[in-house]
Length: 505
Ligand code: ADP
Image (cartoon, rainbow, N blue to C red; front, side, top):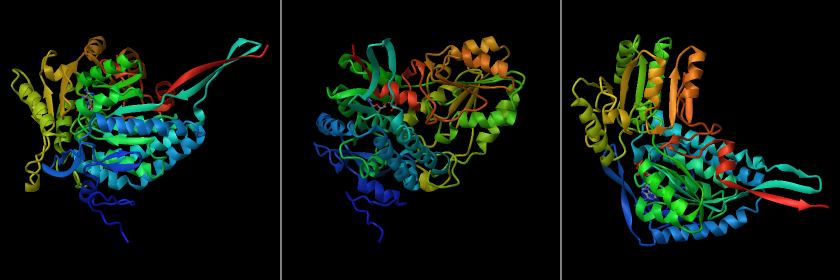
């Protein structure tokens, strides 16, 4: 018998009825292993950006919910820290298996609430989440300390210990993946976690939390929904939260960083980007144009902090590159996020839509600039209220344009020709951001020279892959503080090192 899905009753097995699942998850946090309403009883709507329909509600969290979740997490953490590290890893590995069984369900649910296309984005994200949990699940026995040669009669060593309760705040663009990068290493390291989801995308992360709570001890992984100042801020400021990890805007990152500094707790900040892509004349044109499309995350409507939103192309191939890019983006299908034929879904929200449109209008009104609108708007009447924006490719802008300097977080890229590597390097580095960059050339000497000189936390040559579980990721300059993903990120950011000395004389 399949589970029936009714309000407040979620199925234990995977479901492909994303709308019923959204309704069943409605109005809940997950605290202490239970789906519970907000203490205030208040909720806010969750809207499908492809149709403007309200598909669910989310619990409107505030300081009372934060306090409840953090207290429960603090109690659970004390017991969890006593579980042998490898056993903790095994349980996190079991979480990976459970997520893998729910990939299709999670892909559909995240597509419903974010408008991200199922085939190109949402399903991919769900698979990466399972991979991240699997990766960290295998690292339980790697939480090693060191012995230090201090004196023959003194045994000196370091041991790594968990930090306690981790407060994690996540954004809406890849919420499941960015949540996994925080939760999986935090748990294996012996911490408990309280996550505050993004107001625009609370459902899929809540469902993951529910699935994982069938495996993990109750209280270890809790999920709150709500708005930044009312729910995020009290989480960051809560005295029992001993580590803060945040992904979002630079503006809020500054607020979160200051609040953590006030309490003197460690903080990891993953913030914005304006990532340059530099294409030399010897690069393989076809491969590089395809690379620009993936680098720009056009399938996600460019809603990515690593989006290649500034593309510098050698003047010898500039015109050919621009025409080929425009033609290929033109051929992409924009439409219903849940349709397998769709390449590009929607923008997340009306606010974001207005912001991106503002940048595009400014670019189109700039004298001497050309903005090519690519890909056709969907014709399906069911999508007429959908937040679709045609990808825009701009040339002829000046370097001081807002489109060149600011993070747009939409399907807009700007292209410039260059002739000299030093000039392009200076331009690429002339940004407050320093998250990611890519260089495209068949000359390894040139590629490596650029990779060393580019001011970014991640530089890729002839590719621009999304975050990988085993490679550390994080920006410099205003793009952030600290690293995520990889063994090092778990050791350095979710544990502290204690020094122990034993005098044996
Ligand atoms: P975006 O522009 O991508 O929405 P934000 O930085 O505004 O990025 O939001 C990222 C996350 O930070 C969201 O979960 C949001 O609710 C949360 N947030 C916003 N303001 C605050 C705040 N003052 N304190 C803590 N969290 C906040």
